Image (cartoon, rainbow, N blue to C red; front, side, top):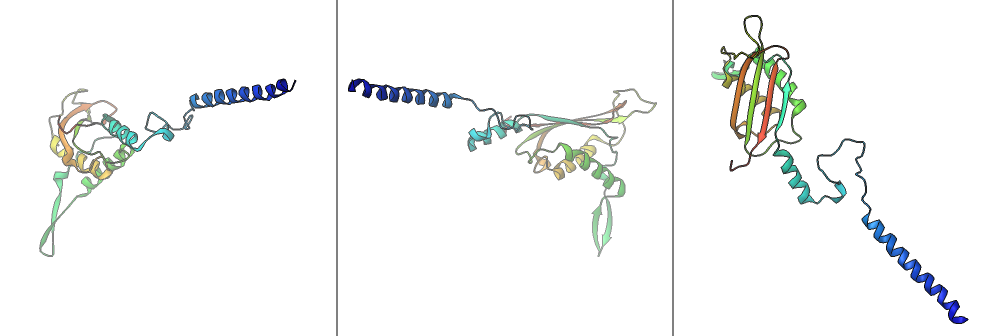
Amino acid sequence: MRKGLFAVPRLLSVFLLLHWLYKGEERRTVVTLPKWEGLKRPPFPFEESKVTKTEKKNAVKRRYRKTMDFFLQITPPTATAQEKQVTVVNGRPVFYDPAPVKKARNLLSAQLAAYRPPRPLEGPVALSTVWLFPKGKSHKHGEWRVTKPDTDNLQKLLKDCMTRCGFWRDDAQVVRESVEKRWSDEPTGIYIEITPMEADT
């Protein structure tokens, strides 16, 4: 009789131990839902709680190797950085931007600020742009604009503004460049595509 009485607690203990192990294993295999469910998703395809510093660093590198592109829906400015003027102060020449260039610089900087990356891009980048100017009555939609301003002068002001807005550290990082200028129906503006490049490509 005593053996039977002692056997019950022993069996119960074994049962509880097995139950605890099973539940523990079950708990270990449960996948928790991302904490950002319903909120703005962070830029990494995995939970922050499970991210090592190395994984996060590699994810950021992968993210910034991707092309970013956007369209500034504006009437593209025709004033360029080449139009700097000079005055003499204390016998020394001082260069300054005339009012139209200041206006163009402020317009581009204000529009670009909405698309700048969280931090400046590092390393070489490729830049492609298409400038779409309002065509008026004397030109066709999509026709090349063969009048001034020159593409290099347009690009110089744009890249200066992109540097100022923090797209990259220095516009010398632009190692490959493509630019078009056309007449266009609405909408007019500037299409911009930026592609981070590997150092050996």
